[in-house]
Structure formats: structure tokens, C-alpha cells
Length: 232
Picture 1: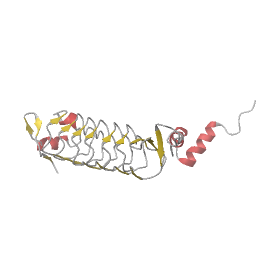
Picture 2: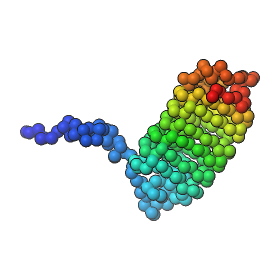
Picture 3: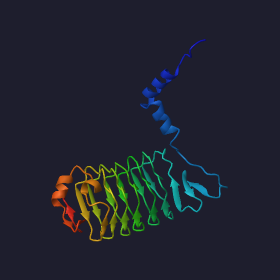
């Protein structure tokens, strides 16, 4: 019996030197992250558009092919819903344009989209659900005029987010909405807020700037004061 001339350890070493990735990392990137999704044209329930998965009527974006190298993506006009985890673990996109036709953003839709920087919520969206933008790379968020509710952990661990303006049309903030936003140093809450999940800033936000925020924050009947600027 003879050992193979090139064994798995040697091949692994060659792969690391050539790509800078371990076998597992290389496999995850190139085997488990789709570059393109194709659906048989006879399928009655689903279809593909430019390599991404949609419902047959084209109204729900179910899955973006996260192996693509594109840095920007425009969700087609006419899409009304972004599915749960539709962009989960997408590593290439820095900007995603959401059209005014979208009314629903699913749970963890943009969770762990590692390079997504700017988020603009269109006026058509009324609610941002749990962990929708659980994404450490986000640097700015702009809410549309239709948003009423921002759910639990909606912007969980957005560590690069430094300021946030919550407009007057928002009435409810969930628990731990900005938990882990460690660089968040400025929060402006509009006058429409009637409910916040937790009144303890440590639980609601958890930021490195907690003490300076508490010095500036006013409490009214155990609730956050509307139009409170914390601090700029």
C-alpha cells in the first residue's frame, strides 16, 4: 500500500496559500453561497429574476443569491414583501435600494449583511420587525413617513451607527431596539412615541455612551420624553 503523492493536508495548504481561506471557508463561500438561483419555468409557485428567488407573482423577494459579487442591488419595483432572511449573511452588498412598492420587511431580512452601510426605509413600509437590520456595518438609517412601529432588536448590534432620528410618525419602539449599538451617541425621539419596550436605557440601547446619554435624557411618568435630543 502506498500513500497518495498529494494528501489532503498538502492540498489544504495549497488552498490556503492560493486563496487565503481554509477548506471550510472556501467551501462555504463557493459551494454553499449561491451565485445564481434558477427555477424551472414550469414551477407554479416560484420564479427567478436575475438569479434571485421570487414568488411566482413577483411580489415577494424570497432569497437574494448571496454569493454574487455585486456591491449594489435595486429591488424591482412591484415587489411588496422582502422575505425573512432574504439577505442573510450577504457579504458583498453595500447599498440596497428598497422601492416604494414594498410594504413589508421580514424578520432578519438583512441580518448579518456584513457590508451594508446605508438604509433608507420607504414611506410605504409601516412596520420594521424583529432583527430586520441586525447588521454591524450599518452607519446610517433614514425612516420613511409611513413607519409606525419599530420592533424588538430591529437594529441589534449596529455597532457603527452613531446617531439616529426617530420621526414623529413612529409611535412604538420595541425591546432592545438598539442593543449593542456601541457607538450610538445621539438619539432624537419624535413626539409621536407612546410606547417603548423598556424604560431602562441599558436594556433598550446598551451603548458605550450610556452615562452621557443618561445625563441628557429626561423622564416623564417613567417614559422617555418626546422630542428629546440625546446629546449631539
